[in-house]
Length: 350
Image 1: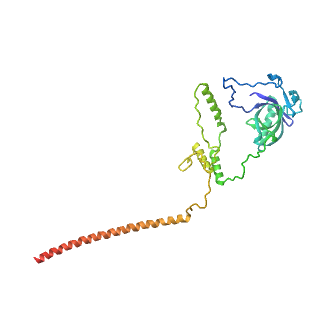
Image 2: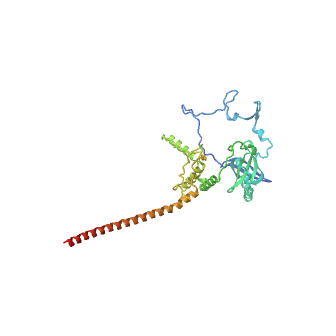
Image 3: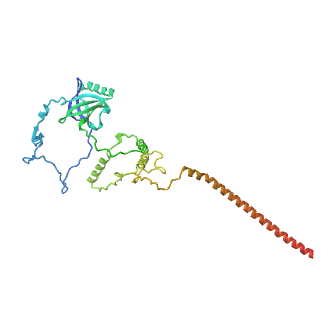
């Protein structure tokens, strides 16, 4: 990797020659401006305001504009002669716990490489001291014409430096928090915790830039003359007032479903879609009363009685059937007796 700055780390009376190397790289796709009428490139030219002529890079210098508009020229030689101890030195000023550094101060990241064989021993000494102390080093250094603040820490077997913003460069978050008092119920916090647990951890190396890949596919398709179909827009429900409980429950079920966990998306559970927007209305006092526990219990007790009534009805039907059968038998026996008496009377008269 190409170094962008050469200097030394000042560690008390120990000097460690190092090279500064960019630790990050930008993978963003850059576009050019064109003239829509003919596709020609649009370029910017540096023109002097006085003679309106284009100026080349070698003819351009720096100047400070005073309050009245006066330009005060400042040369590189002027800056180099300033009594700046950090001009070529990363000067360590303190060692502090890492949690004392506000992440808002984090800026660009660099790797510090030992410059030459003699630098290997003091470089390793500082690296191992940082490891054993579980602390980071706060340092000052100069880069690109200004003094900066930095934080040194160990990444694998390398000392890395993060550029830090000065404390007075961090703006106070005034007027950013929601207006008014907003209360959150325990049930909502419990669901939020459940959602956090369900989402779990992630392998940071598995994350990638989906938008950049889509742009690359778009460019490849246009370059080959293919017709580009518009992507389906997904409605994520942004900007809507939602039923928070329902949204959290559905989010938990969707997270479980995406991870293939058992019990996700079952009957009666959310399907992972965003809840409909419905403000939660308070019920008025005139609404019909809800059934109480006593009435429910009374209804349960009355159920066996109705069962007993059914049994008594069936018993009555059986007794009635028996009586009817007895009457039929009686009537049939009475009819046969009458016939016998008539025949005996005929015999007597004969």
